[in-house]
Each structure stands twice: as C-alpha cells, then as structure tokens.
Length: 276
Image 1 (cartoon, one colour):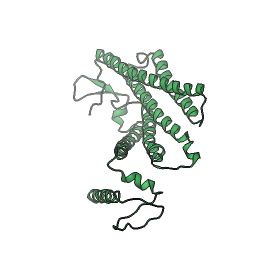
Image 2: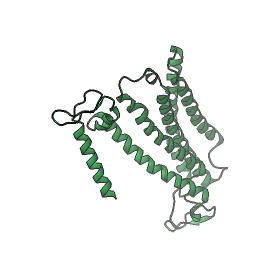
Image 3: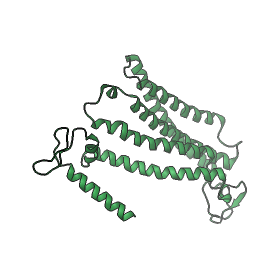
Image 4: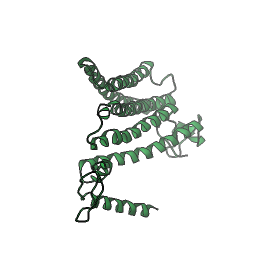
C-alpha cells in the first residue's frame, strides 16, 4: 500500500509538471498545433497546484508537512485525553506511593499524571492549529491565485480575520496548556498547600484570558470592510498587545518550569514517569 501510494504520487507530480509547460489561451480547452493541451483561464485552481517550482509550491509543501505533523499530534493528544479520563493504565494514575525500580528509594504518585485541564487545552490548541493551516491555504493562498474576482469577494475580509483568530487561539491555548501542566505537576508532588500560590494562578489566568479577549476584539474589527483611522489603530494595538502577552506567557512558562523543578529537587522528588 505504501509503495503503491508513493508510485501514484510520483506519477501525479510528473504529469502535472509536464502539463505546466502547456500554454494557456482563451476560455475553451483546445489542442495546440504542437499537440499540447491549452488550459482555460478559469482553471486557476489547477494552475495553483501546478506551480511546484515556485514559492507557492514551497508554501504549500510547508503547510502540508505541518498539517500532517499536527494531525499526528492531534491523535496522540486525544489518546492522552481519554487515558487521563479513564485512568488507564491504573498504576500510572493511582494516588498511591509507588517505589521506582530504576532509582531505589525514590517514590512518586501517578507518574503519568498531567492533569485533565492540560489534556483538554492541548486537544483544543492542536485542533485550532490544524484548522489554521487548512484555512490559510483555502482563504489566503488559494484566493491569491484568482484574477478578476467579483467585488464582494475582494472586499470580504472575514475569512482572513477568522484565519488569524484561529491561529491566535491555538497559540493562547497552547501556552495555557503548558502553564496548567507545570501547576498540576507541582501540586501533584507537593500538595495544594505547597503548590502554586494563588497570585501565580491569577497571573496565568489573566495572561491567557487577555490574549483571547484581544484576539476576539481584533477579529471583530478586522472583519469590517472599511475601518476609520481610529478603529484601525485600535485593531493594530490589539495585535501588538497579543504579541506582548504571548512573549510574557513564554517567559512565564520558562521561569515557572525552572523554579518548580528546583523546588522538587530540594525535596528529592523525581518529576518524571518511571516504568514499574
């Protein structure tokens, strides 16, 4: 099956590359005096897929590779979600202290626990990232290949705004998933009393919450075909604020992970999954 699929792919690429050299004239498909096939002006979609050697082909290739990788990650995240929900295998999710056979004297409680919130946010984040690459190809790259579009299509900014919103939501939820993971692992090993302080949880929630709010505001404003100068400035400000909060979230994740691991090391706690 794999070899057959690969053969079909090679044949398809070869045929489309040969067809790409054929001239295009008129609105009807006719035969060139030299025997070549003449494409119609309306075959922009075919031309879109035939430009394999241009920047467009490279963009589609990167989008395709990213889409396949994220699709595989999406399946893994769904599997992890149901594993946590069903607590299977049981020994990795139990609340009992288990002695490690790798490091004698070191115990851990449910080594595979990452928290249901982390699994949920990961599934949503990867889903939005998947949707972004698909929408990016359809609403942005594909439409750029058409000429003489109707005026209502050229003025329609909502699909582009929606594509941008999906990308931003994927980034915000991904950052929130990592913050939830760090908080859960610390509370899991040290207990809620010695886990993340309340102010830290409020800070994490505020960062992710405002990222989502600014994304929604920017999307609504960008969907308006004609914007006043003041509204346009507000829309750009929402984008800059999102980027600033995203950078702050990355720093939050980095330092939270370091400080939490140092705290666990001082208590001689092994913060990783051990095979029983």
